[in-house]
Image (tube, rainbow, N blue to C red; front, top):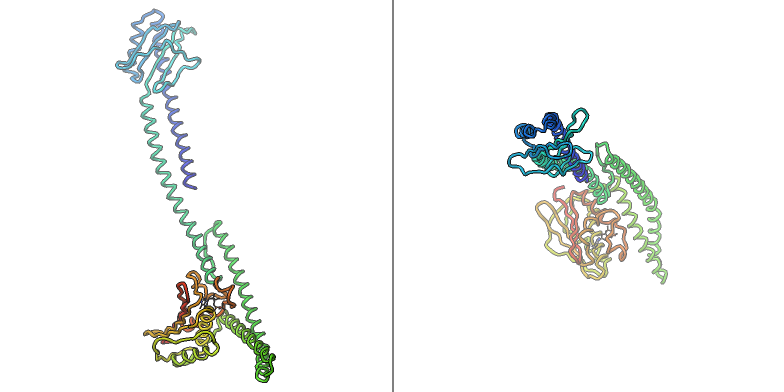
Length: 442
Ligand code: ADP
């Protein structure tokens, strides 16, 4: 836009400049030819009075030397009859007698200037001097001017391009920086980052507004986390008590349908309790209080025991461990790693309602142990694979069909991160493979 405007402004300036310059040349040319006609007129007064054509012709012939641009000249008498003429050698003959200038004393014909000047003697007009000059020089001047205009126009436009490019880069860099920070905040949910912009223009105002907004979001997130922490804490104690009494009821009640009702209550109390534990974990993660209680344990025993205990409650899916034993003792928080594995197993079962198996592979490298939980369920679209580890994120495909809160994988990611390990998912069409790795030396 800036370049386009510069081009128009430069173009207009040059048209005005060239036009002014050529016009100025024409006026100056006309002035000097009029002065010349005046001198010729004054010199020819006596020749006209004595009707001395030879003398008049001689005066005109001096033009060849004194004014080579004059191609034709004539002196007319009072009655506009030709009294003397001159034609530059090599030039075409020109008839002045038919020309009248209606009030003007010069006129531009294409490539020629015509000048008519009255010869005055004692206030009487005794004749007219007519001159015709070629304007070849004007053509050269025009050509040079136009060439110069084009060259300067090209230089000007190139400069305008360069300046616009530099300005654009400066502005774009700052806007892109802001866009990247916004994108990152949207992807990671971390609104604490600020845009640093030391400019003093509209973009820095925008950055300031954006930073204020980020602060407001961070503050409202902090309040929400605080509320979740307090609420889950307050709910935990009465729920534990309810669960204990329901368990007692379950143990002593044998009559139907009472027994069935009690078991339904127990099932839902367990679900509620799991949610509260998840919320408490989230609250601890947020406040940086996810503490680990590390101890050494045999990894094969841990995997086999966890699979066996989970198999008891999984009636429709068979959980199979494939691959060799790893024979490795590791140092980690057993309960937290068990929480991760159970979460992955429960998801694998939950999100593969039509499948019958879930497979667990454990492999070992020189530096880490990798656990893979493979299912044959609904899978996860490529663009959602990173986001499933975000807090409260649920995939589009799952959220309407299967209940959940989107907290499990977020907690898993943080537990594994605290162990300096990695967690990730691969899914191509049907089924999903969740992996987590734990370093051998912690
Ligand atoms: P929840 O299962 O309670 O919703 P999670 O944090 O465990 O929460 O999982 C987050 C989301 O990731 C789930 O809502 C689901 O959309 C997706 N997901 C997790 N595991 C699987 C899986 N094995 N197959 C397909 N989608 C899964």
